Length: 385
Image (cartoon, rainbow, N blue to C red; front, side, top):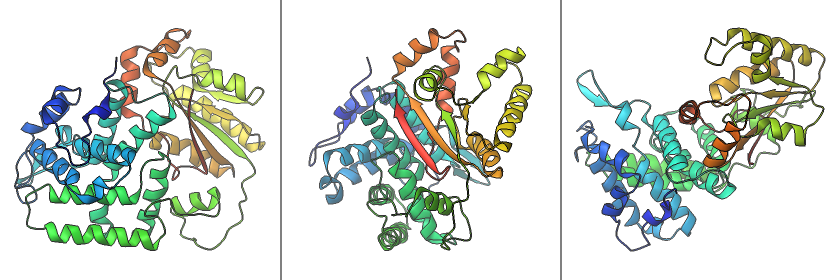
């Protein structure tokens, strides 16, 4: 049975129980951090685990954290625990110094897998929201100290608020609190500069009306227009899309076909699984013929302005963007529906399929999964099935 992760979160005013944390399923990935070095210019405290402990202690000793509601305290503490877990695989010695490029993105993916498999945070809206709020904080934890250096910093704080709100537990205020603890939980000469940068981030988020909630766009079309980087904003534009293509996203066996049969009977479907079977192409073989055939069928439907379903795993933003760009080129809008279920149910459903995927392959896919965010398409929905 998965471990009860919320028991690791201390009560306001109480101590962090490090023995209990290190004996939990988080013990192994956290202990690995004790051997990961950091640049002493920014981290005079030494290894990553020492830094992580200092960050957690700084967080729980602060009045901001103690004043938060229970759920927000839980999300923040778990994010602080795991915020640098990606350094275990990203740290390298280059140009005479230790660095950890892309550790935030990698860490968010590692945290998602840990929380999903070892703590059962999947399959219900509440578990999904807790997990993805933690992952979004990890993914963005460096943003507050860098926002002031961007050419359009207001776009970044608005984008963070919108993407984070999809998880229904993230806010720019929580992100600022985490960044402040991250800054105070280290030995460095630039602490005051970093704290000033975080203050700038908070004030900017207040000015843009997105410190505690997402920016109030007039419509999902306007939101997508802005978040996708359209330079013509804020000039109002007419939504000229002729219809919507439904893109499914989710691990193999989650129930995408079942959902289609129950909720959208009769709508044309471009299914990569069906095309593989038609062409006799194994999932382990090169997929170029399958993708080419799927794209051709999609273009035929797009040319006739026929809404349809694109049915594939579509686990990352990069993969989804390729298809969304095609739909957009033909004047169609995109709705992404991400489906999720509990892990044991996931495996059971997969085994009952005629085209079952090996469990090891599904776990590998889980390590790459990033649920879709509002900056990707006009409409985004997460659903547990």
